[in-house]
Length: 133
Image (tube, rainbow, N blue to C red; front, top):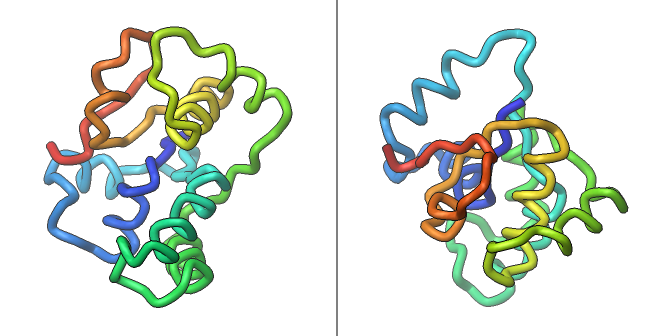
């Protein structure tokens, strides 16, 4: 499984130039056995960005969700186990969305595609790739 951080899902669904060449190649070369996914928490994060007028690619979080899922990205629900793990992660900053997304990637043994400096620099065995590369 490949898990997209919120901004990477937006970049992918809206085909923005922010998505790096190597990251695009990773997404294009996904095999039939691989799933490209997004945490359900990312839609909460998108709703907050839309409400604060910080995401201008769409007028609504529902429209963004429709476009992301329409691009073939699978929504992964937040479970109690993921929530507990998110609270237990050591050395990761306190941003709740990042903690839930990282915990989701860990629980599903997924590679996380992100451009978030804090997630990329976090000292953990989580597989990840810089989405800007």
